[in-house]
Amino acid sequence: MSSGNVSSGHPRSLAYFATLLLTLVATGALYLLYLSGLQAGGFDAAGLLLGRDFLNLHFAGTLLGQGEMTTLFDQQAYAEAMRAHLGRDYTIHNWSYPPHMFPVAQLAASLPYFVALGLWTLLGVALTCVGARLAGVPLAWLLPIVLSPAVTVNLLAGQNGTYTAGLLLLALTLAERRRWLGAGLCWALLTVKPHLGLLALPMVLLRRQWRIVAAGAVCLSVIVALTLALYGAEPWRLFLTETTAQQRVVVEEWRGLLLKLMPTAFIAGRLAGLETGAAYLQHGGVAVLTLLLLWRSWPGQGGTLRDWITWFSLGTFLLLPYSFYYDLVILQVMLVLWVGDPKGLFPTRSESVAQIAWYVAWFLPYLCYLAAFAWNLQPAPVLLLLMLFGRVTAQRRAEPA
Image 1 (cartoon, rainbow, N blue to C red):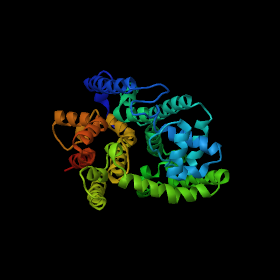
Image 2: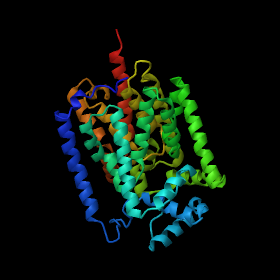
Image 3: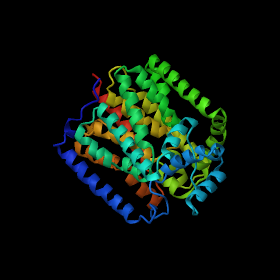
Image 4: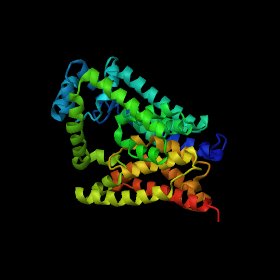
C-alpha cells in the first residue's frame, strides 16, 4: 500500500522551501541560545550536563557495572549517587526504563560520556530517517524532519524519541509489507517505552494480524528471558513496583518545568490549576471523545500506510496522560506525509486555512512550550483532536454518495 500523496511536498515546492526556511530560523535560534550558555565541562546554562537525560542511561550503565543495580530503583539513593559521581549538587533525575534497557545502558557506559552521547544521537536520527523513508517521505524532506522541533528537543535533551519514532514507523510499515517477524520485533523492542504502544495491540488485533501478535510475543519472550538470565528476577519486581510508583508521583506531583514539556490533557488540567482528580476527569473526557473519533476515523480495508500512521499517532498522544514533546517525532513525520494534502488532516475546505494549520502543527512543541511558559496553557490536545476530527470529516467527504 502506498503512504499517500506528498506531491506538493516536492523539494522544489513552496511548501518545502517555506518549511525548511522557517524551521532553520526557529531551530537555529534555539541551538544558538543553548550553545551560548554552555559552561566548562559541558554543562549548560541550567547547570545540566550536555545531553541531559542521556546521563540517566550512561550513569545507569556505570552503576550496573559496579553491581549497584538496586540503586536505580531507589530515588533518593540514585540522586545521591549521581551527585557523588558529578561532584556537584545536581538536579534530580530518575531511572524509568524496564530491565531490558540494561544492556544498552552498559554498552553506553563502556564508552566515554560524550562519545556515547554522539553515537546515541546519530543512531537515533538515522533510525528515524530510515523509518520515514520506508513510510514514503521524500529524501529531501529528511532535512526538515531532522531540524524539526520534536527532533531538536531530543537532540538537546539526549532523549529517545528518535528511537521510538523509528521503531513505530518500522513496525507500521513492515506490517503493511507483511513482514510479520520484523513488525513483531519492533513492537517487542518498543516495550522499553510500553505506554507508547497503548493502541498497538488493539489495532493489530482488530486488523486480524495474528502473525504480528505471535511474532511480537515470541520476540518479547526471548528479550525478557535474556534479561532474566543476565540480571535475575529482582529488577523486574522492582520495576513493576518501585519504578511504576515513582512515575505516578512524577506525573501527579512534580511541578515546574516538567509540566511545560508534556502535551497531554491531564497535564493541561494541572497547568490550569486543577486538582489531580479533576485533571484526570478532564483527561477522561478527552479520552472518551478520542475513542469515538478513532472509531469514526478507522482506516479500514482501503486505508493507506499514511492513514494508519496518522490514526495511531494522533490516538496515542491523545489517550496518554503521560508523554513529552520529545515523543512527538512520529507526529513530525506524519505531518510531512500530509504536506501535499493538508485539507485531509484538518476540518476545513479552505486550502489556505489548512496550510496555516499545518504549520501550526509543525511547530507544535515550540508553540506549546511558549503557551505553557507564558500563560500556563497546554493547547496540544486541542490541536490533536482537531486533526483527528479532520480525518473523520475527510473520510466523510470521500464516501460515495
